[in-house]
Amino acid sequence: MSDDLTLLRDETLSALTAATDLKGWDAVRVAALGRNGRLTQLLKGLGGVAPEARKERGAALNRLKAELEAVLEARRGELDAAALDARLANERVDITLPPRPEPRGSIHPISRTMEEIAAIFGAMGFGLAEGPDIEDDWMNFGALNIPAHHPARQDMDTFYMPGERGGRRLVLRTHTSPVQARTMLSEAPPIRKICMGRTYRADHDATHSPMFHQCEGLAIDRAIHLGHLKGCVVDFLRSFFGIASLPVRFRSSYFPFTEPSMEVDIGWNRKTGELGAGGDWLEIMGSGMVHPKVLANCGIDPRDWQGFAFGMGIERIAMLKLGIPDLRPFYDADLRWLGHYGFSPLAPAMLHEGLASGGGAA
Ligand code: PHE
View 1 (cartoon, rainbow, N blue to C red):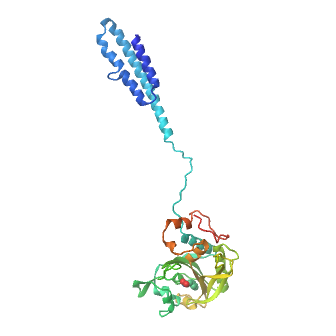
View 2: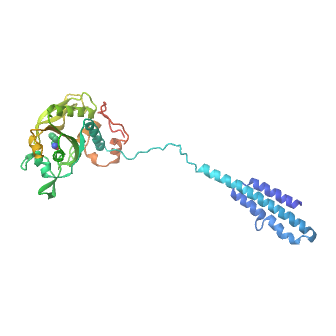
View 3: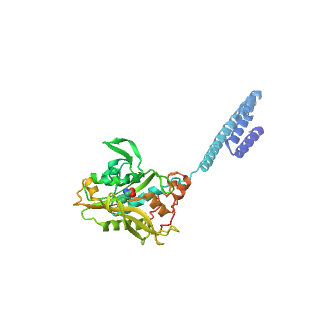
């Protein structure tokens, strides 16, 4: 090989080794074999070579061209592989990396409280019942022994709805007690049911909302007496508030649909808000033995069957348990409030333990 070809070959090979990416590689290719590349120029100049030397020179140029093409091809393969490796390393996803959970939603304290109530009464053998928010006035009042002229109809600041159903006026239910009537009308005793849901009264201040939630309980059986009512309510309250020694007091009262009727108080400290100690009493629910007239209104013979019922405000017991001071933010959908008082969906139940003063566990 003549000197100029040896030089071209050596320079091209070392430039190729120095090229570390496809751009550098292409520059080497163009410099040697491109339209104006050094080897291309030499091939073009072959015509000017003396005829006796032309054949050998032409063969040498073609060999060099073939060699350079092969080397370029091989180097290109190396650079392609390296580029792919670099890209794979760069785009690598470590699938063994655990996710970083950033929980956004939380369980509303009302929902959470309803789950806890259902769990406690469920363990006592109570099932869940439901009824409509829009009731007729017979279910909401009449069946429950609250006749048309009865002051309780005013007491409850009823929202009346336009229209009627079967000749009866429509109301937004003022309590969950109409579900007692619905349950007795649709099921044969014995009955053990609770009902939780929305209730409505035209009342709005720091401790009253026109929409709030109640939990109703109903047990009907052949020999049910006041002792069953007391045991059930005391067990529920101590379990719900997580205070085994929570003082519970039954105070004689009046509801048209129960006889006798009792308001239920729990012991607390009015100054500190601490539950279970302090010598003050806080009213927490209404209860009583189902009035014989209510049983009869709902197709159950009061000579064979007796029962007890109770009703409580869910916001109220949630506020006491969770230390929430104001009722109104329950319905504001304020993310800061929800973040503070809301619950993680996976939070363990806070029952049966001294957690009464705990806040929300988001
Ligand atoms: N319905 C009553 C109320 O809303 C509560 C209650 C229910 C009382 C069942 C006695 C029995 O205040």
